[in-house]
Image (cartoon, rainbow, N blue to C red; front, side, top):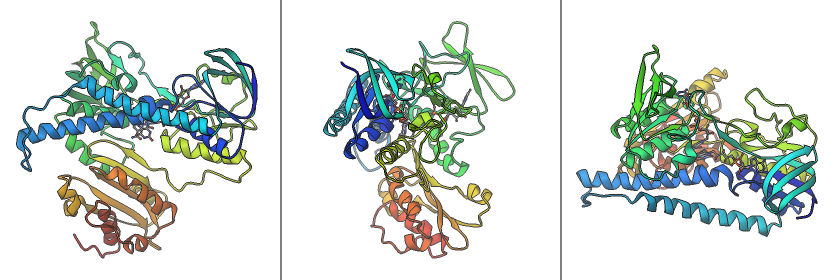
Length: 465
Ligand code: FAD
Ligand code: NAD
């Protein structure tokens, strides 16, 4: 392929990069996208989508097992079993369909897609080791969107039985025993799925409780459910290395007492770090943050003119929807629009059982920011829809300013509450007051009524509790 010059070069075809390229194409910009592995990036291929497919299949199997045991609503299921390779085939088919969609959208918006690894030569040029041979791409603007990679623990490098989420999403067979290191997003989402699929799961967490990134009230129903599923959770415990013969994981509790945990696999999920390897960033003069991410301002501009960084490469929160929002904004800025990343909140969802959603501030965080707040929760036990779903452990919580009732934060725990995230975010972005939510009709019977009732309760007007 011959060398090319374009207006916009996007490096990395994950949700950040491909959305930048599509939006740039929509705006009539000449754009090239370089992707070394797979379009859709981590999220579509080895992250959000395959994990949610596996979680759904595990839920379905878990429900079948529960029906076989106690038939709470009279469904007769006898000895359910799962064909795991077929489950993975289905998961892969979902990924394949979405990847086909991304490919078609890039084509429709005239994006020049180049497959290969890009390394920067200078601030305007990169060399791609493409399938068709080396290619040089020159651009007025470069958008860096190379994402992130899993962090390994010192003394526990990935390989063999020590796996990251990527391998955990494509195991050759269901593990009988799985040890998960890290009770954050990945550890608990995948640990719960494997527990439902029948694996004996142990979770090892360094902090004193699970999901330390969420406040304690939100993590409690998840801890209860893990216990009911028979998942062993070891908190204030650290994994250090494999035992001599490599079959067990050496874990030390807070007092330093060691314990060996044998398992088929050890899933290490202790965080992800920005991916810069192979990109030759040292040839540029970019200011980096201490955690290895590229420093950006509120427009995703780096310290070098016309070089932009988005998504996981630009640090926390490492979430696909943040990467996409940054990507479309950068394309619009390059097209001449005045934009900045002025989001009031970035929603976070943990797809555990029950699911956890958080948008904006938790009560303690709001108080710590110097606000006098009013807060209220509404339990799902008092929500008709939750009872019809047999999913009554959980609640919706609202936090608002005490003086003018401006909503500062909304959170929920419960089965299926991830679908409420959109209305929570909308409320915050629109600057809703408690009265706005209280004055909106929420359809009956739905889980969203719990949001309505939590707002009513904060105003002292709850009807159903
Ligand atoms: P990536 O998606 O990582 O894409 C970067 C791309 O750049 C990759 O395709 C890579 O091959 C390519 N690349 C890297 N270097 C080069 C180079 N030198 N040349 C060419 N190409 C290069 N987020 C959510 O919001 N919701 C979820 O439910 C969720 N679930 C997750 C589950 C798991 C198991 C994991 C691991 C992550 C999950 N995430 C989730 C996080 C989400 O995947 C990331 O936040 C998101 O993918 C970041 O997008 P990105 O475009 O910044 O980077
Ligand atoms: P995480 O930051 O969510 O959780 C890591 C956990 O590991 C923390 O609880 C931490 O205290 C613990 N830990 C760290 N070192 C340890 C040690 N030595 N021993 C025991 N525990 C230790 O990280 P993750 O689960 O690897 O996920 C990485 C990122 O991927 C997330 O931060 C998130 O941005 C993204 N992600 C998002 C979703 C989602 O949005 N639903 C799902 C999966 C991943």
